[in-house]
Image (cartoon, rainbow, N blue to C red; front, side, top):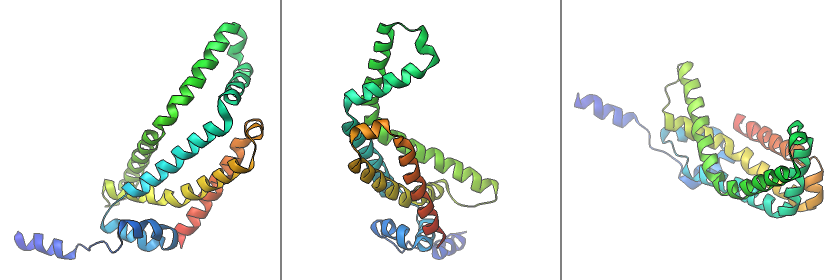
Length: 198
């Protein structure tokens, strides 16, 4: 029995990349990076980078738009709702206040939401791999899930910050901004998938 355990330990390969090397490798050597993640699953630094980028974007967006513009936007959206007709002016004002206050506080919870999405995505990825006969561990699948999302996340967040810097706050609210953000995210995802294929 001891011989069996020692042969298993001998066949297990040690990781060849450091955590920092893995962060760079996912952009330039994705195949080698994913092989190394199989040797030793790790995802904390990549997860922190994605969470920081998304949180920074959320705070920057809130600052760029400002409370007045946010209040106007929420009011416009509420006026479009069929339920708004049955509300009094005071009820509408209270609902707008509530929505603006909620948006102020939810930005602090963004990192928690990001890590929850990592766990849910990793779980779905792990279940899918098990359904098709995969042998990877849960942490290995979470690592692949997070690292495969790192390049598109970085590229889309940089694109979003550029769009935010170029556009005025009024344009950002009035124009179809979320389409621009979605296009930037899709472009980042496409580039990430192309990088992952190499």
